[in-house]
Length: 218
Ligand code: GDP
Ligand code: MG
Image 1 (cartoon, rainbow, N blue to C red):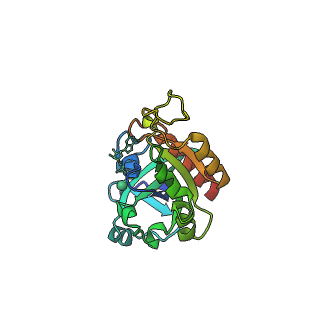
Image 2 (cartoon, protein in one colour; image 1 turned 180 degrees about the vertical axis):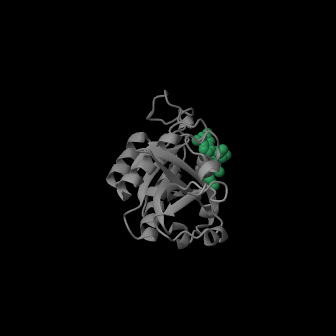
Image 3 (spheres, rainbow, N blue to C red; image 1 turned 90 degrees about the horizontal axis):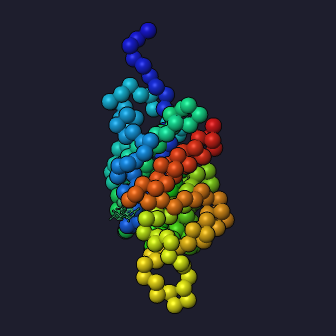
């Protein structure tokens, strides 16, 4: 018996995709980042954690050179710790310069838009948009994908939508929940509206995607 305790942790890569400014970085960097314990599981030299990668394509060096923001977290599913490494595009989405290595080995992806900016939703849903790009770059349908409408705190909920003249300025929502849900259903995506600002549904989104990945893989 040695004094070393090894803990098996399943860790999956999850990509954050979407236009610049939708809140991708904020979702994974701002506390509260519930149920995620970056310091506990993210670093192999802090704790004796054996990280078992489901695919052995993990190569931190190559990913660092393409400049991704990295964060990690974990949730408990069926009594097991299931971890995720989130790859954020670090602003490169602005220049459409995301390379194929960014996508390699991904098990999950968030497609994030801003509910107050219709163009960010359309850049996911239209031909050649983020969903197409994801499907082409991963060239399989096996990536568990969640459509995320972020900034729900700005929705102006409670105001009535759809006035003919459209002059209700308080209503900042430009993509209805129903439309996004319908698009998600039609394309086999999970769907959630979140606010990285007030943390609503952020935990649920992470748990939701990790649970689905876990059940898909095992
Ligand atoms: P990224 O370019 O997709 O990584 O977007 P950022 O995470 O950098 O966020 C862009 C801006 O939107 C920042 O000023 C954030 O503070 C703000 N932001 C992000 N998420 C939310 C949210 O849920 N609600 C509100 N009101 N602002 C947000
Ligand atoms: Mg960012």
